[in-house]
Image 1 (tube, rainbow, N blue to C red):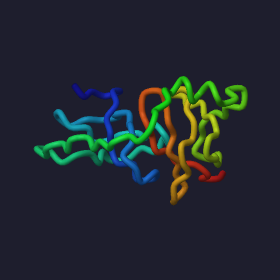
Image 2 (cartoon, rainbow, N blue to C red; image 1 turned 90 degrees about the horizontal axis):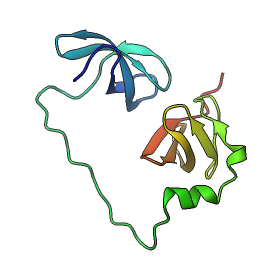
Image 3 (cartoon, rainbow, N blue to C red; image 1 turned 120 degrees about the vertical axis):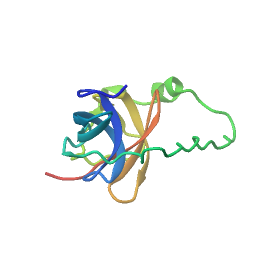
Length: 132
């Protein structure tokens, strides 16, 4: 159930991604004003259209042996973990400490100032290198 102070996925106008947002205001059962949990900009809720059927998650076949998250993390130097900030520029295989998702590592650097980060629970696309 959605409520003020709760979280909802919404399109962020600054990050240009669908990310977790904190609900600031609601009209009836629908959020109307939200704050991006990544860049903290407050904007109108831009979520799924009412009545739309959510698409099933896409899956892909994995090739070869698959290492667990813990096995991969053990190969990294955790003492060099960097606290995540959208202003910091990250490189592939760099360990990140995110305030919400915990420890993760950069799986790949994407176009448009984005990185793909593997966390224990999920694979996330985050912004980086946004400067001061």
